[in-house]
Length: 275
Image (cartoon, rainbow, N blue to C red; front, side, top):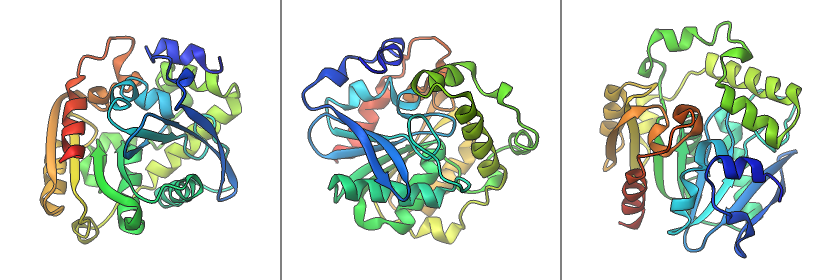
């Protein structure tokens, strides 16, 4: 079966053989966007991080969430199995692409979970596509540059593909066996973060949906930044978990072959969605 290798490596159950599993490509603003749908119930849209795609960000998480929701996930522009356009990456464009994909799929309202760069995209969705949104889960995201240490930003100045986690490179090539596409994704992700400007406090304060902010105590953004976001988004909830960036969601680049143990994150997510 297509992509069996990555599913097996990530301990991903055979969701693809389930009768309610669907995958395909949709014409989205000039690119072919790959998507997957599985499970039943209210839709939950998952948005992966930079340098990643559906399975590398969420391969450990989906098998748990699929028991509670219909899961809709996609590979964003230039990532994984999705095509590219002759334009830089931007969170606005990702938000436009996701909104168009949902229209194409006939999804009128959903909950959203965005991790890392996907969390930045969720912020953009909240500001520009509120009609689609019930609830938001913002995971390990930054809304301004001073959320992260200066060393983090300096790392983008002369970043080379060699610094990308090897398991992310390996898994990309298993679903898109094109080294030029891998280099292109890396270069575009680096450029986007190098030029990251973020959002104003006023823009963040304008988000009025139920929001859960999740982060780790040793994340890219500081715990203080997560608290600040929590203070600005009225009525939001905040969870700070032990570990590193994405570890609490089972993102594979942080696990480095170790078993994902923080499955209690699923209960936190489901409890928030069901309130």
